[in-house]
Amino acid sequence: MSSVLKVIGIGINTVLLAPMVVAVAAFDEDRAYGLCRLWVRINLLLCGIRVRARREAALDPRTPYVFMSNHATHVDVLAVVAALPDIQLRWVAKRELTRVPVFGWALRNAGNIIVDRSNHEQAMRSLRAARRQMARGVSVMIFPEGTRGPGDGAMLPFKRGGFVLAEETQVPIVPIAITGSTAVLARRDWRIRGGEIDVLVGAPIAVAGADHDSLMRRVRDRLDTMLGTARAPESVPMRMAGAR
Image 1 (cartoon, helix red, strand yellow):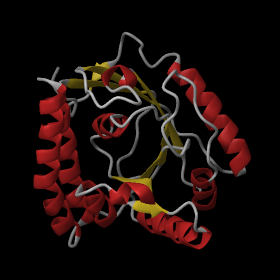
Image 2: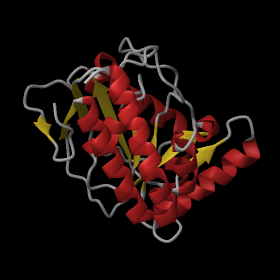
Image 3: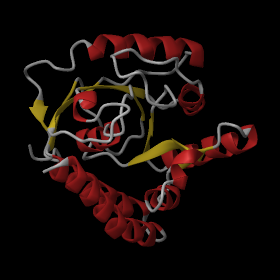
Image 4: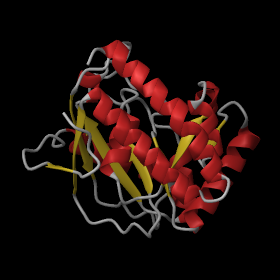
C-alpha cells in the first residue's frame, strides 16, 4: 500500500474511533483505552508494521509503573502500546499534541496527562493527575527526552518531570528500548514504510532511596545498554503486533 493510502487510512481510523474513545472515556477510561489499543492495531495492519517485543522480567498488570522510552519518530507510540497489550497506560503528553485535529481531542479526553511546559502551576496539576491514575493501578508512559530525538541512536538530554513523579510516588521505572522505528518512518518524512520494530521492555528499576538525578543517570545508562541488545534474535512477536 502506498504511503498516501496509509496516511488516508490512519486518518479514517482516527475519525471513526476518536469520538468513540471520548464517549466511552466519559464513563470508563479503562474501556476507552481498549479502543485506543484497537486504533493502534488497525494502524499497524494498515501500514504493514510488525512489532517484535520481549521482556526482561515479568510485569504485573495490576501494579502501576512509570514506563520510559527512547523516542525517535511518531510510530514509537504504536510500538509501545503494541508491546504492552496487558497494561493500562496513560500518556504524559505535551499540550501541543492536543491541537492535532481529532487525535488531540481524544488524547485530551481519555485520561492522559497533558503538560504545558511553559506553565509551572499547570505542570504541577498534571503531576497530581498522574498520581491519581497510579493510585488506582494505572501505569504512566513518558518519553523522558520530551520530544523526538535525532533518530541516529543517540538520545537527547532527559527532562526531570517523570523522575520527580517516580520519586514522589515510589513507583518503579520500567525502561523501554525501541529500535527500527526510523526505518519505518524517518524523523522528517511523512512516508510510512512497512517493516519491523523491535521493543525491549526492561526490568523495573526500584526508586526507593534514590533522588531524581541519580534515577535519571541509572535509567539513561540502562537504556543505552538495552538499545544495543534490542534486536536480539530471540525476540518474540507479541499478540498485538500488526501484520507485515
